[in-house]
Each structure stands twice: as C-alpha cells, then as structure tokens.
Image (cartoon, rainbow, N blue to C red; front, side, top):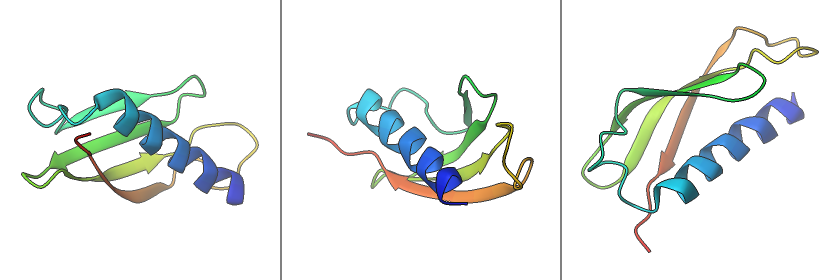
Length: 79
C-alpha cells in the first residue's frame, strides 16, 4: 500500500511541477494523465485558488488495489 501512495504522490508532484502554475488557465480541469504502468490520474477540477481535485486509479501489476479509485487533492503553485 505504501508503494501505491508513493506512486500517487509522485504523479501529483510531477504534474504540479510540469504545470508551473498555468494549468488552470490552460484547461487542466477535466483531464486525464496516464503513466507508463497504465495507471491514471483524473483531474476533475482546478478552482480559482489552484486547488486540484480528482481521483487516481492504479493499474500497475503486483498491487492488491488495482482498479480502486482513490481521491486526490493538490495545488497548482505559481512560483
């Protein structure tokens, strides 16, 4: 289970770093991001404060939580 949360955190951190605070303006809301293991981060909304909400579904082999959606929250930071 710790590997799952590490994977989720890694995806969210990479997404925030890649966005550089402009994701909301570029339509990040209602998008899906799939990694090399076919796991997917679904972004449902980015509010005006930069709060990201959505869910993550793990599809990587070797985990007991395959196919289970987990809620995700995070922030798009500017600078």
